[in-house]
Length: 368
Ligand code: SAH
Ligand code: SF4
Image (cartoon, rainbow, N blue to C red; front, side):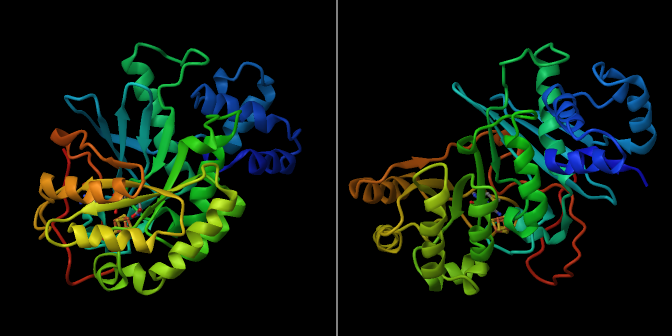
């Protein structure tokens, strides 16, 4: 079987070249061609000797996952369904804003963590994505956005995707090695050259992996909190039973020592009558008191048979005001791409569940 060069970061690519008797600096050239210029045909890599190009074409490949569908929302948000074989697919979303363009990237086919309000979690889990399938989402989105703008290749210095958030389907820290390698490629100046501050990983709170991440690849961190006390969080974010709030808050503090930003973003999905009272907001202030942070309130995005309702706007405002009056920066996330189901927690993809859950399952949405 040929190796897929999209599975490698630059150091691994250098090892590969050494292994086939070539100079390691070829790795940098290859990274530039594949990721910076978006070229997936060896024949076009004109500063590489023809003989080496032919050798690579025989022994290696640059294989991208397949785009199965692409949808464009009225507000400019785009969503791709990316085929990952065996009837599975994951979703990737691009959100254009005035001052930036953010790509929301998936890390797993489904998710095993079963947060009760999450469409991905309800679908079960199939497998981890490979590095090429994670970085491939950025590659494919870049190509599609360039083409939409009428370019074959991006003019240097012009970046349509300025930010990446690991907030699509899956728990990124549960696919640790592949996610870290893919993020290293995002940060590599020869590849996408994104700053650490503009790559954000969102986790439901896998404490040991948070500690590893701060050493291996410290990027901006978002933590899905969603509840101010252990009793409620145990119920709606079940991983809390393993890593309860006290441990999670301590891990956030440790992370900040190495983080590129001096705060953690706490995400908090607003569920009507579940976690959205003024009392919950006050408890939340106590829970996070030792962690420099900002809050991102996410109005619950409904999906069929979820059993939850979105908090009422008045309650969201009251909740927000409690946090703001205590001096915190609070943003309330706008829902984008409503007409194409591209909002947080709505990414369904195509998941052939392997966990054989007998409860919690919703019908798999097939996007055509
Ligand atoms: N697994 C990671 C990242 C993916 S989810 C995590 O949980 O952090 C990205 C964000 O969307 C998380 O904060 C998640 O809790 C939130 N989310 C999940 N379902 C949602 C829904 N139906 N409405 C709004 N936000 C949701
Ligand atoms: Fe998994 Fe995140 Fe959804 Fe929880 S919220 S089920 S961790 S994708």
